[in-house]
Structures are given as structure tokens and as C-alpha cells.
Length: 478
Image (cartoon, rainbow, N blue to C red; front, top):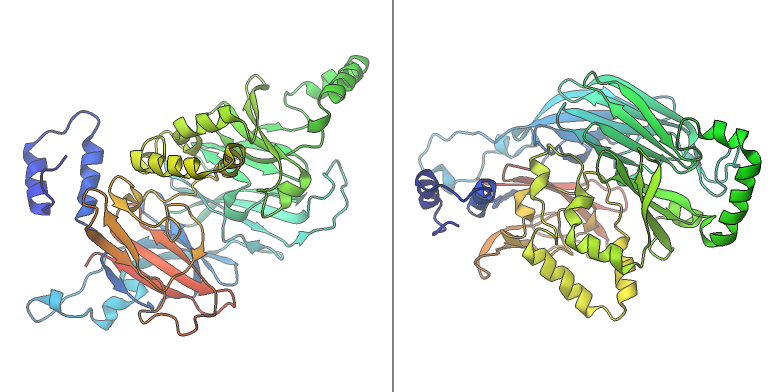
């Protein structure tokens, strides 16, 4: 722990003192208390793109064209400018320095969508070890499609869904995987999960979990499909033992009548061999609000094809595992240094206190558990690893801003980041939208925040629901 808040003293102390074993990175992150994005350029002149996110290593900034046809990738850079006069800190930034291009250099623009497809702007997964990016394009949904070929009744159909694997360094397409007349939930990358080099894609329409491996060469290779059959010889066994299978089916349906209508909703890797699979009704699987639908969780071993554990979404045991070992549900890579320091209630005392305060206020513990289990399985790469969301360093209003990658209702008031160690000290604040505030208070506005994982740099993007031009602000340390 540093003895002073002065950054110069901290640098000197770091030079002469050796941190305790295993604490060097935590100690280094305390410098972010001194280095904050305290300056804002309002309503920046920038390309009319849909900005997605920074990659978790901070090397790329991903965006899409407004017509959802093109991928546009930038390299984040740091602002540089010069003055002829002395004491440049007292002057406003020159006009040239207040532009988007002062912070981002375009690397390339490539067309991904074709044949009536559009880019899903919410879908993007990053393979940090190879700097590969996974994107998705699709045609329009058909909501009343007949359930042909073993499809599930009530699940929409999409004529074509294409997953594109690109090398982000130069935008080269390495491989593609196409699903025809299928349905994968692409919103917020819900229908796919990346763990190291393993990729799981959930077909809701045909109830299959496709496991693929991403090779270093950039090839997408089929590993297995989990669904109607789990082993390679399952179909042969069922056909050759039909009488025995019919007897098992009768016994199964007699004892598990409540479970026969469940479908796979969502999946995530727990490690290279185990999946956490969420089951529920058809209505809940395709609904935007699945909170009110009952659901179940299974821990599935892909190697042995066994269900290791099975829980209802109100199970106390599952909740206590979630409370104690939350980080195990967030894992998406063993090698990603940037993702290992995100605050959760299993690694941060302040986050745990917030959770327990919410739990103590709950009038019905069973309903509280169900509410907490809505987030499981976690969407892959859905949180920002920015140190400014480290709850051991800063305190902020999570109703207005958090590490979770979601739009939030915008406010005309600045969002304050308070020092955690000095509760009365404001470290910095961020205000989305125009500097003078909104002129029309009746218009509902939403805002997203895109933080660089390492630099004191962030974008706030405020937009209305009526497709008006977005207001983009750049927040950085001057």
C-alpha cells in the first residue's frame, strides 16, 4: 500500500520498495488513482459509425458502418499537439486536436455483409492470443416459420447466419461458418461463447451446441455437436436397441414430465471440459425478458457426456456457489491478463457488501435468488477490464455506469467517480451528451460508455430512440 497520494512520491516508493509476493499488479493499478480521464471534449466531430468496443488488450477499436455492411477498425493513439506559447495547460485545445482522428487512426474498412445480410452490431468476440475477431451477419428473422427438419415449434428462423473470423491486424477473412434456416441469438453475443481457442455456438431452432476449435492458422474446425446425440455412436446405439430405448423413454417421461418441454437457452464454458447450460421454455428462450420464466441449470461434462449437477433457478446451493465463486463464471481465457482484475463479489469486499446489502433488503429470498440467476450463464466478454471500474479504487453509481457492456438511460448530470480510500475526494467525473445539457427533456436518451482497458481514455455515446445523430464525447487525461 502506498503511503501517499502524490504520484511523484509513489513512483519513488515503487522504485525503492519491493511489493509483497503476488501483489505487484494490484500495486501498479493504484497509480490509476492519480491518472484519470479528467478532461472532456464535447460533441466530437467523428465518422457516422456505430462504435462497438475496444479490444481487451487495447490494440483495436471496433466499429461498424451505419448501414451495417462494413467493419471499420481503428488503432487507438494518444493526442499530440504543440503550442508556440508557454504554459499550454492554460489554453484550450486547438481545433485540430479536438477531432476524432487525433485519438484514432483508421486501419481499414472491409465489407462483411452480402446477399441481404446485415452485420449484427452487438456481436463481437476477440481472441487475444492471435488477435482474431469473430463477427456475425444475418438475414431478417422469419417469426412464423414452420418447424421443419426437427426444428422447435415457436422458435424463429433466419435464412442465413454467417460467422466471420478475421485477423484484426489487416482485416483478412480467415474462415467463415454458415448456418442456414436456423436461429442463433446474436444480441450481445448471447448465442456464442469463446474460451481460449474453443467456441460454442447455440442453435436454438435445432437445439444443438456446436463446439468448434479456432486453430492458429485461422481455421474453424468442428469438434463436436451436443444435442439430440452427444456421442458419435449414439444414433447407432439407439437404432440397434430400439426396444430397450422405448422402455427407458417411458420411465423417463413418467418421472420427469416437468422437464420434457425444456429447451437449451444459453451456454458458457466453465473450463475446457465442462459447460454450464441453461434450460427453459420455448417462450423464454426467444423472449427479450426471460425473468418471469422458470429455468434450470446443468453442469455438463463434454468428455463423459454426463450431467454433473442440475439446479432449478431458485436453488440455494447454486446461489451460494455463485456468491463464493463468481469469478469462475466470468472466465473466458486462462491467459488474458486484462480480464483477471475485474471486480466481483468473490474477489472484492466492496462488491460483496453491495450484494449482501441487496440480499438483506429482499423480502423473499427465493425471488432474490431467481433475480440473481437471470444473469447466468454470463455473456462472453461482456465486461470492460478498465481499472476505472475497479471497486477497490473507485466508487460510482452502478445505475448510471458499470463495467457491463449495456446501454443505459442517459442523464444530464455528470457521473462521479469517488476515491474508495478517501471517501470524500472526487477523482473525476464524466458527462455524456452536450456540454450545456439537453434542450428537450422529454426525449428519452440512452448512453453507452466505451473505456480503453489500459489508457485513461473513454468515449460516451449518447443517442435518442428516434435515430437522431449521436453525441460523442471523448474523456481523457490532458
